[in-house]
Image (tube, rainbow over all chains, first blue to last red; front, side, top):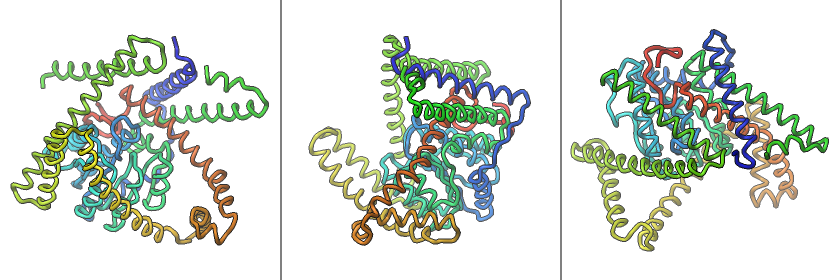
Length: 256
Length: 221
């Protein structure tokens, strides 16, 4: 028996999942979807090249949260790609993580990134991933210290951040790094918009891995996400119209 | 690793993930006491695994820092300082108990002081960022600067004294200009999060928890 008030949420989840799966398999059958270029991802590509030219490392930060946060997973997706590209052209990646569970996943991802880049022999445990401690300002201080020490040419901030982002991005500016930010927290995003050279806004963070890998099938699943946006927008419009007309049909349906 | 072991390892992991995901979803959406009990049990396992990961992390840090100190590598003094602090706090916590007044008082009396120092740094970083950002180069930065100036004035005593009624204007900016954008980001980010979750659950996502690839463009996993 479905819990009271959860029926609509379950229905929406099933519908959105169906969109993602359907569009994924449509893509696998050969359909190509248009993916609008995301400026921040192009900047990431350029920044890795810049790091190679300058002989300086590229730094990745997937935020302060653990694996339970979707932003961390999105950050890890992007960091995995950045690590692979960096390893391929001989740039040293520096990854700083806060949560203990993220540390382990990041270490495994970096290893796989080096193997995927056919540079597996260069990988050493503990050389590319550092644990900063899970406390906010301990994390910020560690990141600032590492930025000043390593002087990275590019820093990718994608994940969950709080006020520490101001300290880290400003320190990045001091060493002349290109900075790309990505977050869905509106406060941290505002800071990123101020300081970073480019930012991933809203759902762009979650679509980034698909865009950056140029994986056609995965791009299809992003189309499914767009279908979900259309349904949500339609529900919001209909809901507002019905609400203004005094009809509570949709709002009653949502609390079923 | 042999092919059979690799096959078992891969599929066992998938089966475990499937069971855990179904348990979480069913206990969230349905009234099913046995599944809810299983979910509670799994949550305890999750905590245990997290604690174990923390313990492993501690061992890794001690080994890595000890190696740095023995070889007198760069910044070995800070590693020594960290190890002394870890040892002191661990002993202190075991002896007094982490919830004892003595431990909590000692912890907070050092932590709060360090926090205050960090927040002091934050003010300087804010100022330096504002110095770079408050430059009107085109109409977009002009709009940004005007909106920001209104909000700065509305949130500071000098602004409220100089411009009576600036509070109302500041509230209007936040409620009418900022709010729609903010809500849009929250809604699309939530849907994007759901889509990413589904891709990860179905093994479509190549990024997080990535497998080794033999080629680009969505190669073989």
